[in-house]
Image (cartoon, rainbow, N blue to C red; front, side):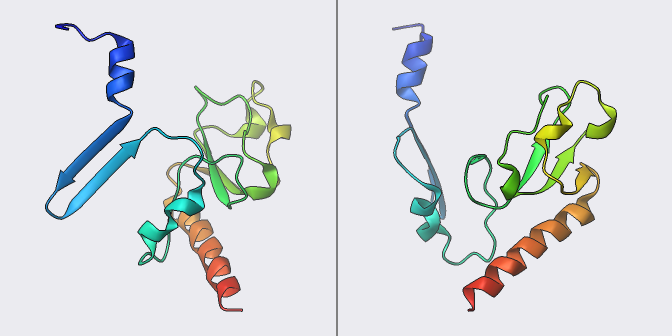
Length: 130
């Protein structure tokens, strides 16, 4: 057809491959995979940062924006820090009870956020050596 409808776009976009001589990116819509299924692609990496997986057992930094978040959504026991564009304790519209008792950083506090990432990576590698 000369005009694509939204369901045509969905059908077309179920598989996307971008390829060049020395790199590729594959996006495929397919259910039934776990994050661990993709670890073989990262065997030569020391650190892997993954977006999403809010219900997973992985340690995480939850990112919240005032325009989007009314409460924290990740499992409290997995959150190591929050990064926000607001202070949860000063915003009456935010459910601060939804947060775990861990540090809250502004988006500009890059060094402090990186310290959390490196501390968690160090814990992971220490446990792997046992």
